[in-house]
Amino acid sequence: MKQSQMLVPTLKEIPADAEIKSHQLLVRAGYIRQIASGIYTYLPLGRRVLRKVEDIVREEMDKAGAHEMLMSALQPAELWEESGRWYTYGSELMRLNDRHDREFALGATHEEVATALVRDAVKSYKRLPMTVYQIQNKFRDEKRPRFGLLRGREFLMKDAYSFNESQESLDKSYELMFEAYSNVFTRCGLDFRAVIADSGQMGGKDTHEFMVLSDVGEDVIAYSDTSDYAANIEMAPVVTKYETSSESPKDLEKVETPDKKTMQEVADYLDHELAKGLKSIMFKVDEQFVMVVTRGDHEVNDVKLKNLYDARIVELATEEDTRQLLGTGFGSLGPIHVPEEVEVVADFAVEKLVNVSCGANEEGCHFTNVSPGRDFTVKEYADLRFIEEGDPSPDGKGIIKFARGIEVGHVFKLGQFYAEKMGASFLDDQGKSQTMTMGSYGIGVSRTLAAIVEQYNDDRGITWPKNLAPYQVHLLSLNPKKEEQKELADELYEQLLDAGVEVLYDDRKERAGVKFADSDLFGIPLRVTVGKRADEKVVEVKERQTGDQDELKADTVIDYVKNWYK
Ligand code: 9G3
Image (cartoon, rainbow, N blue to C red; front, side):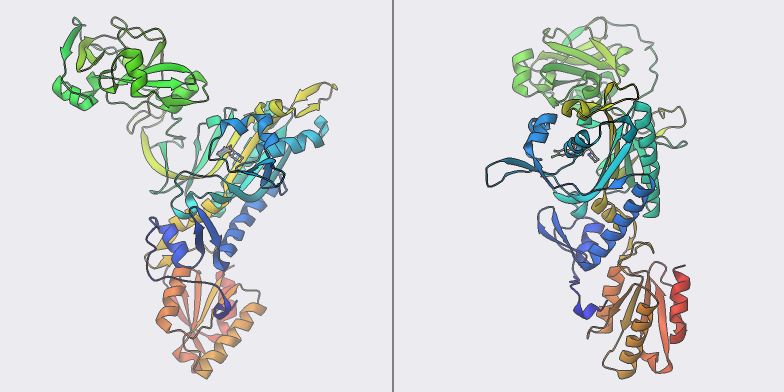
């Protein structure tokens, strides 16, 4: 392809709204342009790379026995009413009405569409298991789109759905997908971990996220420093064994703590460390008010709370809630003498504490020498705190460390939630009607592209892995006005094309400095430069990642390139 005819608008300066490397470089190198917040156009270079990522995904899906389809982005509201999700999703689901005023959703995901399709088309166990997939733009009206392709409102996803006759069959489909995902991210050259994740509102229990390690990742991974254990921090169980305190319980006392609100202020005022105070936070779990008590230095894990109650919605209670229920604001909440409409649950770390402080449910008052069990009852002790660095790894091997990750894939065992809601059943080998069991499997294709740039770049631009660059060779003629340079470069271009090499030819009438700067931005792995020594039929070859360069006779270039890409 000749650059003089291409739309590749490179930029010298870093766009003001681009905070991270991949966003900055994809825009500066002319790969993408934003049309609206979180919505992007893929320019020719960007489209070629996106297609290479897609093709890796496609190959691995096909190898795993999944079959590609293309479902509609426009989804009739009726399907989401059947699953109930029309009502549970808020403004993140983009909705519109057609000319007859019928309601539609723009596809955020396709469980409903896929289930409706299969329930009407598949009736017999002989046709199961069956896994279908598509690669298509998804629409999710994110409140705060940011980081370029990492969190957009229209983005490219591969979503697959398996339909199984049993849980065992689903386990097998899940395993096949899990392996396919590992292949995809390995072939993309990414440093990733499969982490145990929370299924969120997706029903089902088993679920893994594929995380690319990156400082700009929004998710935090808890991983073992000695084994391959890794879990999304929301899910990572705490297995610490707490020993009983050696202190003897003292008499409960109520003390004035004038306008001491935060845990630290109270601990400083009462002269004890954070861990000798109780933190009490009020939640609304579905419709139930729940006070969660943790040790003062721990953080409540709301996902664990949601899973404990198997709830759909967990949100913080407001101060007016706590004033109404307990007569006080957040600063002096505590579990002693709470009304029965408030359930008290506590993290395991609280059970063995003695002589700690807690709010007295009275403005500016706290209790000291509190002993859980003696001074307040707990409906249930559970693992309700976030795991911390240094905690023992849940698999018993080593200790936990944290890393940030970019979620590029997510696999779910859905179970029968959608099949039940939407009547997807089949006749088993005894002729008995059974409900299908499902799995759903997503890869953020555009997000994967950005994650690759996050991992492969240097201070001059992108440094694509060989199999992902938009072209294999970047051919530069430094001064096309010089006849011998233009001729040699044109000839090499034709030879490279004839040899089946993907070549981008910078034939523009631009200064050499501009050409080199753009070439470094693009990140094409191999650069062939026709310059001053064209009259001797000598060209320069340079590797983008290593910077290694060589001078070659022009008639050896084709073999050199073929060899380099073997
Ligand atoms: C929505 C909106 C946002 C959503 C969803 C639905 C996330 C939603 C979870 C999934 C699960 C799997 C198939 C591919 C793999 C992931 N955000 N999820 O269901 F309406 Cl607005 O998408 N779906």
